[in-house]
Figure 1: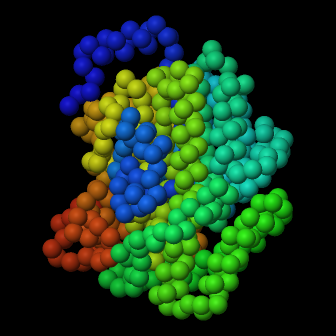
Figure 2 (figure 1 turned 30 degrees about the vertical axis):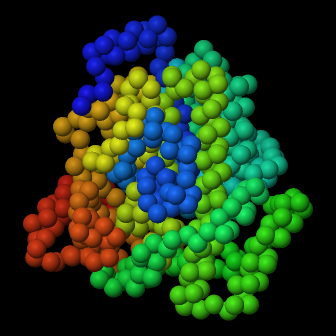
Figure 3 (figure 1 turned 135 degrees about the vertical axis):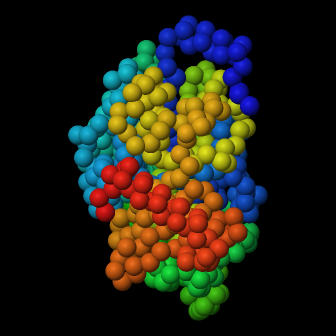
Length: 493
Ligand code: CA
């Protein structure tokens, strides 16, 4: 179905001509936010921890079920979003790298097209932001309480909860700094819900009396696959470490904040230590503790997204602002016994994407077929800004997809490449998926392995069928596709 009828096209053209401006772009970005923790995506956490404000973006826009990242880790994903290029070409392969701020990025292109540009919140690319009229960013990972924000080169300290403060500062920019003669391109980027999952004080006790359902793969034994997964160091029971158990809230918190945290966590931690839990009981205890704090952090994100949407409503900007919500990657919420990300397995490979664009995107639409990617975000930004030349980027503008007119030659396969060897025990790997099948290559000589999954029969990816004759044709097809994409994207392993 084509959403835009001839009549609405005429009206749209008319109103665009009358305003003579491209829409504002509000990019809301979080860190490590899994689709499993957004109720619009459904699933067992939806009722326990609903996200009504995030869901509103989906209800009034389009929700993508197959948005895949190119490299499932924080800094590299951010570099891809800015440049529209794979990690090996934008130069930011792993979190230890430093972003080359001299290269062209989407904010620089939209600035040239007449937009005012700003970034507020998490940056995490080491070098100072470039291409923004205004930046106000956390140092490195940032902290959940009382953050310092590098404000156009000068550190300004704020007291309070970082998710709230990032929204405060975003609204402040809109109210006091934005030149309203220009459309804005505004990246409002949260630290939450990245570890160590420190909730707002107002949410510390929320979910206390709830038993959160465990994912079916919490006690995965990693049989049925190569030995890659079994070498992980991201187990809920064994790798969260005591520093995550015995909270070291100190200099980062005000005495009052510390007192409240200490009063909340100390009795619970002491109860855990006293119980001396082992084996599955230990995993279960850690899972409950982890998932509740994660969901509490998400709740603040949801509340703050609600504040921004309301601000747009109150200022008559909702109609002419494209709101995009996404995260730098997905995350394991206990699936496979894990926290963290990195793998090409679905939970961290997939990232949330919801886009509201009144007059262009059909409200309440769900795209569960097209393979889209954070590789496409930069080209989408510049396309919205009216730049037709796609600037040698490697993705593709999502605008026609958002209009309900996915081009016939839209990608049928997606290439993935993770470079940060050894982080949480995850080896370098790359692969390709067509949305139904997935081929993964672990090139490390110690592994020298392949995995192949049929996502329809095995959505939890518990059994690699690599080498199974039943899948010989599909496997061959994806191997050829992998080689084709590596050549196309100039991958230099
Ligand atoms: Ca991240």
